[in-house]
Length: 85
Image 1: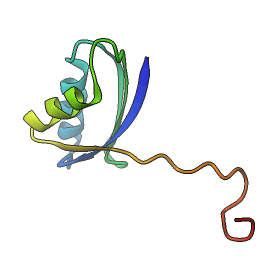
Image 2 (image 1 turned 90 degrees about the horizontal axis):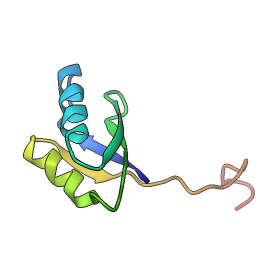
Image 3 (image 1 turned 180 degrees about the vertical axis):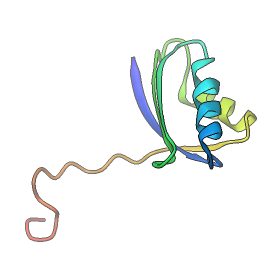
């Protein structure tokens, strides 16, 4: 299983969030979806043997939503990067 966080554009209401959730859950191989309207993102757990990231993004595009893989923050431990970088 693979987990990806997608930044979603065009998701402006609760109903949009419901639609994003439904679009992603309808894809064979998607096991779980968590959508955040405030964060403009969706976290998707999927079986990479059945579906790939581009298929998720294509399904969202067909539903009228833009998407991009969210960048992962660089792990710097307890350091903010200011004094210990």
